[in-house]
Image (cartoon, rainbow, N blue to C red; front, top):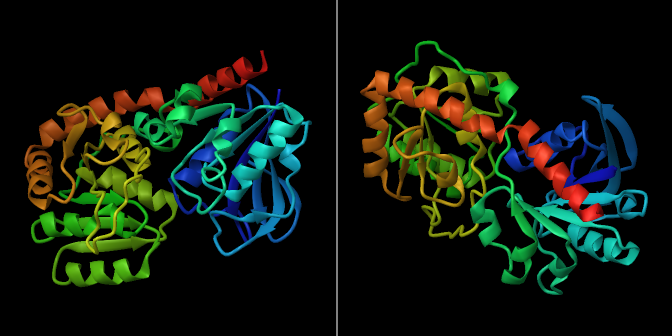
Length: 355
């Protein structure tokens, strides 16, 4: 079974994953290798082929102003030679064109929405009707599909590179961590308001909104807040291992009044944190509550509510034995979301489409 995994993202040089969605597509492609012959496609200034981590990687020429919604100049993956095409992101020009071309050659197209993309004709022309299977990473993700498409959707929750985030039994610092891109709907301002005067906070991630980063720095002035920007994977892992609690403070309505009704389809840092053995506190936003067992692996709190966020985080900070117990529970809980398990289920969906 020949499978094309397509990530509609423009990389000028080498792969440099900006967020969890990009990394998800790449790691799924790698995990699928025992089940199918996989080629991973992205976009860049010119055509090139290479091998990375044992995975064939093809860069197709493309461009445009939005790197997360490139305009392709070649669509080699859409040809008959691939039994299945699996495109990541629903709202992209690449996925819209793939729906038309795969329909023309009568070959199946699978789509996983990871919350990115941009303007496309997918909804305007109802091209989602020509997508054969939607693989959704959460129940929340499935709920965002058009009603007519949900009958073709399957929910396969996860995944996470479990081997990259092993359980850590060491002593934890009295420190709170948030790992995410620095952008308004991540709610880092609420975390600073909740705990910045009391305990050290580490905010780790890439800057996706310069204004928000500047405003966070102002809010953090004089408080115990450290920004870890563009840190290497090893440094992020060390913060998970060091921290007593990981927080995901995302919101539907940000501090500027902007609305984000479709954010957090998964919440990957929660899975990473629990895998390491660090308990979590997340807001009831998107798919995040689906992955947290309330009172056993962490807590779920209302968004835009620093007081409740502070209360729940303090319960873990002030009771290390409870935090350790919940951390162990979280480590066991996330084993079901490893990429090996996800890939096995995804490959089974491919096989059903080809029967």
